[in-house]
Structures are given as structure tokens and as C-alpha cells.
Length: 246
Picture (cartoon, rainbow, N blue to C red):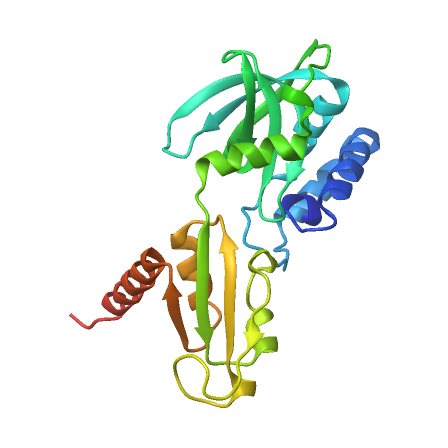
């Protein structure tokens, strides 16, 4: 349940499949005890994705496997609340978030939904014949195309005043690993073994990138893009104002 509720890279899909099967065979008394245990504990898991109720995932996974139409409430990125009825095709984890790839009956087209924005999902019991994805694409490819339309890529360039191992352990794997700098390279001071530079392409939001850089917990310099520089500057000013004595 901990693995399913957090999109932990490498175990997420296996966790949901196993959990969905267990939910079907556990006696109701034991199922209640397991649910109560999770509600009373705090899982110490790493990751930047949203935490999702495992029951939401198992309901969706069951509808995918059983080829049942699914109803749920959905909150879009701008906060708009809608009701959806879909033919669920596949759950996909990106390592930080869960997505549902489905055919939206009301919109008569394929859609991808962030599962952390799904509320009160339930399988209607109405069966459906599986549709073919457009142009023979797979669920992961369809999700990738959907995300690329919503996100722009950023060429991130940052120098850290800390060793590679220290920085790598504190950065998301999606950003890759920095490389050590020779003594005197880039900006700032320090020996080569104590400094490194990250050049990466990311589709994450600039707000999220600014926060993640700050969480590395060392001195750093953002060389680009210019909008990321602005976001880091704004974040620093906001944090300074939060601690100002009035």
C-alpha cells in the first residue's frame, strides 16, 4: 500500500497489481484492519510526487482489468471541477505521478488524467470492448505526447558549490547527475573536488525546479534559463520576507 500510494520508480505497477488482487481476496475484517493500520502510520518514502489513496488506484486498476466503464470527479490544472465517464485503458507511472490513460466518452476522444486529481472513482459495471489507441501508439507514448503539449522544455544550467556525490543524492533522478568541475572552472570559489555543474533538459515547472535547487542545501549559481533565474530570485525574496521581523 505504501508503494502504490507513492509513485516509487521500479515498484509502482507491481504494487498496484498485487494490491488489487489482495483487496479482492482479503476478508472484510482483515481488510479493515489493514486500512486502519495505514491510516495510523506515516510512510517514510522518498519522492516528489503526490500521495494517492491506494483505494483510488485499486478501483481504477480493477476497472482497467475488468474493462468496466469508470466514473469519477476530476479537477483540472486551473481548478475546474468536472464529472467524467471513461473507458479506462491503462495506469501509467512516471516515477513522480500516476496517470490514467482512458477514452473519455463525453468528449469522444482519448485523454490522460492525473490520478491525484481524481475523486470518488467507481466502476459502473458496464463492460466495453477495448478501443485501439490512435496510430497504434502505446499508453506511455500517448501520455508522453499529452504531457509534451502541456509542458515546455528547459535547458537547466547550474553550478553547485558541493561535491558531485552530495548534490546527486539530493537531486531527483529525472534531472540526471552533475559533473565535477576542475579547479577554477565556472563561477565561485573552491577546489575542483568540491564543485560540480549540472546541465540538463527538463519539462518540470520552473517553480518546482527553483524549489528543488534550494533543497540541495548548498550554495549554487543558476546560469540559465533566465526565467529560472527569476524564479530563484523570487523564491529567495519570498523566504526572506517570511522571516522578517515586523
